[in-house]
Each structure stands twice: as structure tokens, then as C-alpha cells.
Length: 497
Ligand SMILES: Cc1cc2nc3c(=O)[nH]c(=O)nc-3n(C[C@H](O)[C@H](O)[C@H](O)COP(=O)(O)OP(=O)(O)OC[C@H]3O[C@@H](n4cnc5c(N)ncnc54)[C@H](O)[C@@H]3O)c2cc1C
Ligand SMILES: *[C@@H]1O[C@H](CO)[C@@H](O)[C@H](O)[C@H]1NC(C)=O
Ligand SMILES: *[C@@H]1O[C@H](CO)[C@@H](O)[C@H](O)[C@H]1NC(C)=O
Ligand SMILES: *[C@@H]1O[C@H](CO)[C@@H](O)[C@H](O)[C@H]1NC(C)=O
Ligand SMILES: *[C@@H]1O[C@H](CO)[C@@H](O)[C@H](O)[C@H]1NC(C)=O
Image 1: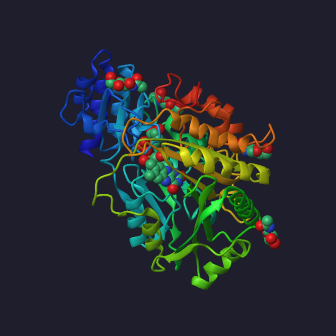
Image 2 (image 1 turned 30 degrees about the vertical axis):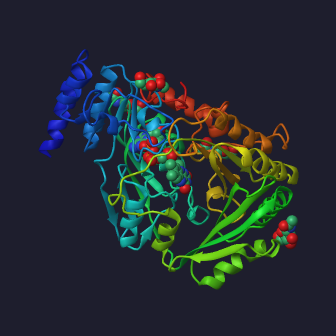
């Protein structure tokens, strides 16, 4: 309690220092911060994607919501744009502001996870990474839907959606959230729910970074499945025309409504000869039963395919081992430092009501088999299964939360790194990925209502307002106008006034 009162007094005090400079403002708020020129500034301001070198005005490390409020007020007093960083994995370094000179609120000192085992809920502070969340919940027999990379932060991930292998079963990472504790641009600390600040709650579920700094999310947890395994199949040296057919068959299988306990993702990569691709499927099964239940769920697709070049079943049958296998690295993120990459990525979300034509599937594979064969980048593409009639993602209407692309069948992630994962990123790498997108879209009707995924953020994307937010954009703009009229929470692709 004394700390709280001190923080509030300090906040009230610093609010009056209108002309105070940034460092004395943050010092006055008694918040840890790193400034340009400090010996740890380079580390504190390093982006996950080394394509970006950014110089924030400061990186501040709050420990309480009250300190977050003080920092925002110091930022406003100094006319700075303010952003939060959770896991720092934004594809365009938006956790550092996406520009030079922003004030960064790094959440890494706020890592509490409080589990209520009788209500089956949890309060998760936004300094946590996905691996740590999975481990803590699993220790209580519980779980949440979320992406595979253990180092991604729950703050950014759940702000923009959050797709993982249990999403057809449980929804996106943002779906189990029933309350969001956040600090607004005017420094007010709120708990937003469907009843309290309902407009803000709606906007935070899909577009949070434009509206508030989230300090914790309150979620309904799920019982960890009693059985889970991961299945990998690979077909090597596939001629592009065959690969187009395989994708079309996977779409057909997906539309037939496989059980929600089944997850699937195609992975396309460079072929061994020009004109070919490597076609792989990673599937997973979460539910009662055993290997036979898992196999029979994927069998209708395997029935229309040739025998795979290789296949394997991964995991010991426990839920947490399936998370670990998919994560590909330790789930305990305190064990090893985070890595970096130098890359550009794009995405396509295909509407379930307008499936791809065989021509679009084949054109995509032809592009990968020719341009992809000669590309000077290290690239991969993933086609994630979101939809199908049994998917939980689509049970919620597109306008129920800010996340507007729930009627998606597939989300394509198109990802190319520099060949050694270090700068510079080759200029051809941008046009290479643009061409990948148009190899699909140019073979679909002009009116095709496809989208793009906010968590695979593309800083070069034109028409992002529609591709990301579609029909929800006007309402987002009007809430932005009310809640953040000075545009304090600005970054490239933040909601406009
Ligand atoms: C290796 C890797 C694997 C991935 N795998 C998946 C996957 O399987 N599924 C999937 O859906 N996505 C995946 N992603 C994408 C990932 O979900 C996004 O990059 C996500 O936004 C990263 O969140 P973060 O907190 O780590 O990043 P940050 O850079 O910290 O934040 C991202 C954005 O959210 C904002 N933000 C962060 N914290 C807060 C907060 N507390 N309050 C308000 N705004 C905040 C930031 O300002 C920034 O705009 C992956 C990314 C990488 C790099
Ligand atoms: C930020 O500043 C650095 C160092 O001066 C510079 O290299 C970089 O291009 C700047 N970035 C932007 C987006 O202006
Ligand atoms: C499409 O799916 C049906 C079953 O739903 C199957 O009988 C048919 O062979 C599939 N066609 C292709 C091209 O995969
Ligand atoms: C969503 O759209 C439906 C149908 O158009 C409408 O009835 C409903 O009120 C909308 N909900 C919200 C939250 O805007
Ligand atoms: C801060 O903004 C919120 C949302 O617009 C509003 O409800 C609240 O009254 C504001 N608080 C102050 C102190 O202005």
C-alpha cells in the first residue's frame, strides 16, 4: 500500500512538471530506465528483426500499473509517442515504436501469473512469454490457445489475435480473455470487460496497441488435453503442378470439417530442382483417445495423397510435450537468451466462403518452384488451418471483437530471411514476397475478400486498414478518437484518428 500511494503521489507530481525533460521525468517517477548513451542502451533497444535499427528516446521498466501510468504521463508531457514491448517479437519492431524517438515501456519486470484453480481462471501479466505461460498453466493441469514460439510475448500476441495448434479447438489467444487491465493515454488505470468500458474492451481484443498499455489479462483456462501428439509428413521433389493439386486437396479436406481437435499446417520450402517444391504437413491432435484417433482424423487427406517420402509421430502423448515439440526450443525462456533474425514477412488470410481456385493453388506453387528456387533469401511458407466447419475461431462473429478476419480458412505466412539471418536484408527479398502474394490473388476474382494477419505485421503493406481490420475499421477509428485523441499510442499501422 505505501508503494502504491508513493507511486500515485509521484505520478501526480510528475504530471505537473510539464516542461521537465524525459530523464528527470522518469527519475522523478522512480522508474528504471535506459537512455541513449547508457552502456546497456544497445541491448535494450535491439529489435528481434535486425532489419530495423531504432533509437527510442528511452526504454523504461515499470513494475506496477501505477508506474506504467507515470511513464505514459511523462511521455505525454514530453510530446513523445509511447509504446509497450512485451516479448519484442514484432516483425516490424513496433515494440520499439517502429520509428526513432518513441518512449518504450518494457513489460519484462511484470511477469506474475496467478492461477485460480477453483474458478479455472488466471491473471497473466504482459511481461510473460508464451513458453513461460504454458509451463505455469500446465503445472496446474491447465492450458490456453497460443502460438508455437516460446519467446513470443503474451502482450503483443494476444493483442492482435494469437493463432496456435489448439486454436481450432479453443479459439485465438485473445478469445479466453474476459477482462483486460490496462492504462489509457490519459493515465487512467482501467479494468475493461464486456460491461466496464465495453468499447475499449472491444477495441483491445484485436487492436490493443493503439488504445492502451495492457498490464495483465484475465483469462478462462482450459483443461490440458489428456492426450496430444504431433504428426509430420513430407513429400520431397514435388513438381509444382502436383503441389498445386495437393494444396487444392488440403483445402477440400479442410472444408469438409475435420474435428476441432485436429490442427494442421502445410509447410512449403525450396525444392531440390527448379520446378519443384518440398511439400510438408505438420498436424497435431488434442483430445481423448490415442494415436489411432489422431491418425483417423488426418487419414481422409492422406487417402488422396501419394505415400509420404517421410513421416513421423512426435511427442510422448502429454500436452506439454506437444507444446515443447512444436516450440522447437526450451519452454523456460529464462534458460537461454532470445535469438534474432533479419527478415521480411507477408500474409494472406483466405475467406472460407471463397476458397482458392485450382489455378491460384498451382500459380502459387509455380512461383515457389521457380522464383523461390533462385531466390537469394532463406524462405519458407506456412499455410495454417484456421477454419473448417468445426473451428472455434469462427464461432465468434467478425464484429464481436476488433479481430475482424474470423471467417478465414487458411492463413498463409510468407517469410524470407537474409541468407545468414544477419543484415543487410536483400532488396529483392521485398519483391520476391510481393510476387508470392500476387501469384495467389491475381488468380482470384478482383472482389476476393482476403485479408492479412496483424501478428505477421507487414510494414510495407498497402491498404492495411481493410486487409487487417475490414469492416471493424470505422468503429476502431471512432474509439481511437475518444480514448487517445492526441495519438499518444502511435506506431506505423496504428489505428488512425
Ligand atoms: C519466431 C516467431 C514465431 C511466431 N509464431 C507465431 C504463431 O505461432 N502464431 C501467431 O499468431 N503469431 C506468431 N508469431 C507472431 C507474434 O504473435 C507477433 O509477432 C506478436 O505481436 C509478438 O508479440 P510480442 O509481445 O513478442 O512483441 P512486441 O514487439 O513486444 O509487441 C508487438 C506489438 O504489440 C504491442 N504490445 C506489446 N505488449 C503490449 C502491451 N502490454 N500492451 C499494449 N501493446 C503491447 C507492441 O507495442 C507492438 O506493437 C511469431 C513470431 C515470431 C518472431
Ligand atoms: C533511426 O536512427 C538510426 C541511427 O541514427 C538510423 O540508422 C535509422 O535509419 C533510423 N530509423 C528510422 C526509421 O528513421
Ligand atoms: C474432396 O473431399 C472429398 C471428401 O470430403 C473426397 O471424397 C474427394 O476425393 C476430395 N477431392 C480432392 C480433389 O481431394
Ligand atoms: C454485429 O453485426 C450483427 C449483424 O449485422 C449485429 O446484429 C450486431 O449488433 C453487431 N454487433 C456489434 C457488437 O456491433
Ligand atoms: C480518461 O479516459 C477515459 C476514457 O476515455 C475516461 O473514461 C476517463 O474519464 C478519463 N480520465 C480522466 C482523468 O480524464
